[in-house]
Length: 341
Image (cartoon, rainbow, N blue to C red; front, side, top):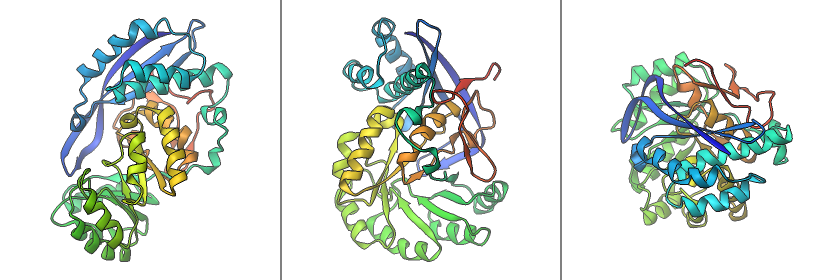
C-alpha cells in the first residue's frame, strides 16, 4: 500500500480552553493508504502536546514503518493492526491514523459503509454533545447561544465552576455534561455533584487526576452523578482497572490506537457493566467520520471536532443544525480530502 501524509493547521472558530491548555489552531496529520487498484482509505491523528505527541514524532514513526507498510498486502484490518502494534508499540496516535485508513480501505474494497461491515445499525448512533470550552461566563453564554444544541459538554476546572453551570442553565433547557479534566478533588466532586444534578447535569467526566485511584473510589461512592473516566483510561488494559472506580469510560481513538482496539475496549467495558463514551481530539471530518461508524456501539459520543473548526480540509459525515448525523452515501467511512483548503 502506498502511504501519503498530509499536514494541516486546522483553524478553530473560537479559542478552545480546558483546565490545562488553550489553543486557536489544531495541527493534524491525515494519512492516505492506497492499494494497487487505486482505492484509498483515510485516517487521522492530531498533535497533542499534553501527551507529548508532536508532528515531528508522528512523521518519524510513519517513516519508520513505511518500508514494511508499502509492501503489505491488506486483507483484514485486524491482521494489519496486530503487526502494526508490534512495529509501533509506543506510537498510538500514528497507529490510530493507519488503522482508521486500513478499515476505511477494507470497507471501500467491499463497496460497503464501514458500519455495515461490522453489522451495526446507524439508527442506534447516540446524539453528539457540543463542547463549550472555558472562557469568561458571558463568552460561554454567547457560544451556547450561537450554537443551539440539545446536548452540551461544558469544560470546567476553574474557581467558579458551579457559577458557570448556574449561568448557562438560565439560557437553555439542553442536557449538560461536565468535564473537569482532572481539576477537582474527590471532596469537590462529591459536593459539586449534588448541585450539578439539580441543574440537570447528566454526568461528570474525569474530575480527579488520572492516577488518583483512591480519590476515584471515594468520588464514585459519594457522587450522586455518574462519573466517566477519560485521562484514567487510555488503552485496553485500563478498562478492567476502571471497573469499581468509575461508572463508565471515555475512549479516544488516538490514545488507544484506533478503531480495532477501541472495539475490543467496548466489548470489555460491556462485560464489566461499564457505560461507554467516545470522545474526539478536534479532528477534521476524517477522524470524525471514523468515530461516526463505531458510534452505534456507544452509549454517549462527543464527536463535535469538525463542528468546532472554522475551516475543514475534509468531508465525510455531516451533523446538521438539529444535531442529526448524516452518513456520506459512500463506502468506507465516506471521508475524503477537499481539493482546496
